[in-house]
Image (cartoon, rainbow, N blue to C red):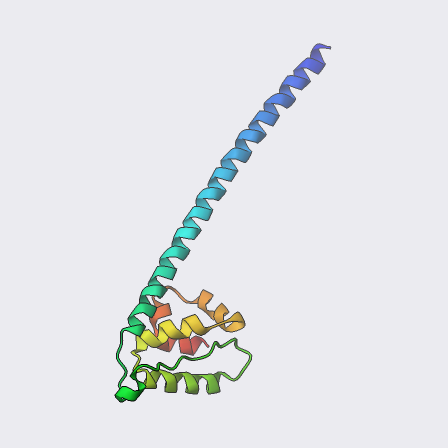
Length: 136
């Protein structure tokens, strides 16, 4: 009978250790989630700031075109990159975009497999138009 009581106490101690460990793991997981949310928030703010500056740039075309800013369509990687690139360049030229502005707009237009290349670029490369287009 004493052996059974000892086993019960041992099992209770193990259960308490497991509960403590589980709580610790859950706290660590929450910290990681919070860190990821903060990183994503910072990156979105950077992209948002880039897009805001895009709208503030005046067009190099005559006044009749100033109120109309051409916008590229999304690129998913399934159609020809060369054709999309040519159209994107023409739209960027029409809107008088700088290289960094083109990088901001292009990254915001990438979808599906085309957007997956962004994972391979560091945050500073996300503002480098030549590095983005080379990766595509």
